[in-house]
Length: 263
Ligand SMILES: Nc1ncnc2c1ncn2[C@@H]1O[C@H](COP(=O)(O)OP(=O)(O)OP(=O)(O)O)[C@@H](O)[C@H]1O
Ligand SMILES: [Mg+2]
Image (cartoon, rainbow, N blue to C red; front, top):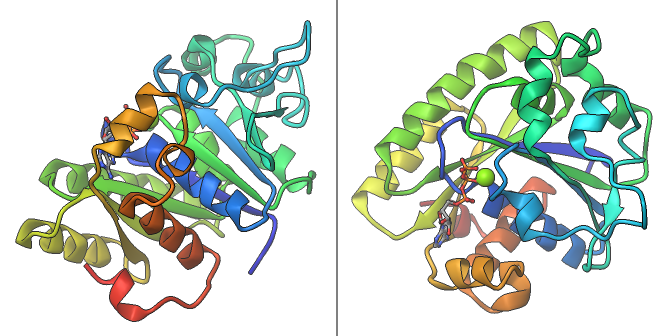
């Protein structure tokens, strides 16, 4: 296993399960004893920053916007959370304004990559991106070693979102980050059906060599969000938690029984 490792969770389509996947993967990694940083690269206020509360020291609260505007380093903007081993970089609504700011630093899309390359404090950094291919998502893809693409198991449209993502990834690979690879598709909100199988097969075809991992549907997911807790803490034994454990194992390159990765 190559550590440190940077994983971008991306799909430009909205509501595919990116934030849930980023959060639960992070929780699965810390359960394995890894030191994990979650970066919220989505300016939407209802995203990860609202769900996972960071512990800020008094008088200091840097966000990802400050990192991209070169007001602080990524390390400065990384805060502990209530969960041992889990740290986070929070988002802010002004993150979406960086792209059009006249003061944005040159090469801003490579800034996260720059910070991550020179800093080895975390085993895994997971970047949750928003439903667009705007600057924060591009910065995440430039910084990442691997991409995880969540698609709703019952949505044909999510597969189309993933196709546009593929074009962007190819451009980033050829211009800014040749190491980038698509590691896995997570079929979120999964229920066994012919459609889910077809979508899984389409994703394998779209991203050859990547693995497809189902994350089963559970009402506990919404309940955990309401309670502002990770699913793993709110409902430890749910099938969805077990599925994210499997996804974490797959990403770490650990051996898993073959039938668990098939859809
Ligand atoms: N396994 C699951 N079981 C039940 N509901 C799920 C599951 N996975 C995802 N969902 C639901 O899907 C919805 C979208 O999830 P999430 O917010 O993670 O998507 P997103 O891709 O981050 O959205 P956005 O594009 O807006 O950032 C949520 O309401 C979540 O509760
Ligand atoms: Mg999200």
